[in-house]
Length: 206
Image (tube, rainbow, N blue to C red):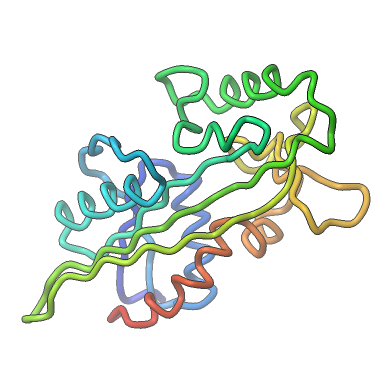
């Protein structure tokens, strides 16, 4: 049973579940809990800046070590957009379906070889000062290459998962939303970021 806690700076239950599964694979003694405090203004212009803003706020509010993920999809033909604006691509409301439908409209005339994209996950870990030990801040990144589908497929996942086809698959290629949770957790951008984050989590006390 988990004996320690690390807070994930999100109100998104899907992310808490996904992070919990990934963390549990290497640190089953750590419980990933959701954040119930106020959301800070994410006014950073990079994934790293926004991840740190959220992790700092969650650590300050809870007194626990805090992780925050700022992630999105970068489409090469769009110059790396939506990027940090992925969650609001179709407007101010975080509407995942509206976001990917707008993206598909923008790429409607783009041929498959030019629909290359990457899911990016930048994870910040903030460890509050304790017992004379200074506070620590770390940032890691994971990149999952692929391409944008021409139509949404699949019922798993969230966000842009139904329109993102990861590379390094056999045939038929599947979208991220067609992968099982176990498959996605093994290869996703967050899983890749956790390869770098793992040694940092190893230093957390349970």
